[in-house]
Length: 585
Image (cartoon, rainbow, N blue to C red; front, side, top):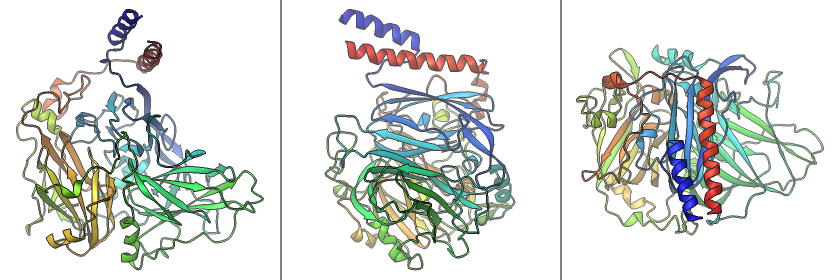
């Protein structure tokens, strides 16, 4: 039998064109195209994945290999990125311009990566050309392996909420506004899973399609909430129901009850919600604008309906209001400060996820990244970090390194802000492999911002208002700080994070607020192992795309869509067959 299995595995490797690995595969075809939708009652062009807006769920399990064949049916280049998926040793799959050439219109590209030692709630979205403002996003769930218990009773079901601010103009029109030197102004509404608000009062137009979630009384559901919006922090709440926080971006939290919760741009959370109310009527689900003039922004509110199976009637009356008062920002900051790591829970591996004693490690470098309100540079409106507005390289960084392209970028990004005129530059951080760095996000802009680091989770050890200084370290949480990949930074405040640089590659550091990101508020860390022997960084994939100085290396794609689909399904069938044979062996 062993010989038979060996022969089959060899045949599988030859037929599939992929190297054999013990961990299972999941495979998806993503067709990214325009469709017409009217989420706020106004017909507009949105970006769909497989005809769905938002896109379909990408569902995997710890250590699975994920294959996503992306077909670009847009009229402009496309990249999909996977915030929070760490792409261990494999920044070639990260899906941002510093690491990947874009997928041209009418082309396809297959991403392949492993969700190594990860669990939790994430999302995917376009990273180019302000496209996320028109859609193209969808949820990612990475499940625990069966042998690793979750730190709470198995829920009776799951509900996914994709929330975000929304404009009735498409991403191209919004791009033109920013390119003209203007701010976008107030959004037209907030969507929940691509749908507009329930008509909770006369301010909501008639005929808007809203969402109803059907639940069973007495049951407990895991609720995953993702803010995929452009720039608005949103307060999420379910009328009369408690939200028990249990996970954020791949790490279990110390469990705490909230009546409402602020979800900032780019963030993901999991809550347990028990359907323990009477069923005299349905209940409101609300996502409303936060840290703005809420009286003026009242119309920017997403409203869905929670419907018990034994509900006796529709919901009515005013929307529930948040408990915390944003006019007292110190009070509002208490909520993120209350998010702590569950240090007794297993994560993706059987050892406790909180067992990493980060507070006892010496900091090797400190980077203070200061954001300011957008300013004019060379006649155009731009946003900056440390006075530098990032210009994406025409040749992705590691591709330039491998092919000895000189001058593609600079490794001179300043580790702190200087008093000098802002400038455009392709300037990156020359980070040290196996360093343990402190990054201070100093927000001197007028809006609350979210900052994200690709390739890593970081420990959120402190946040406060004012200007960060060395003596602030005395207030750090050096024991059970939450580890995550996207963190809010209040206007006029700072947030401190610690990162262990053990993932070789080129990794984007950016503001998730799409308007600021589009205007240049980002940079990259380049992390190389001087003793690289093939074990700390993967080679470029065989299907790598070439552009910029290397565009002459790119071959034209010649295939039919039907052939691509057949190949994708054939590979998936082979993978399923392989799993069956492995179980038999």
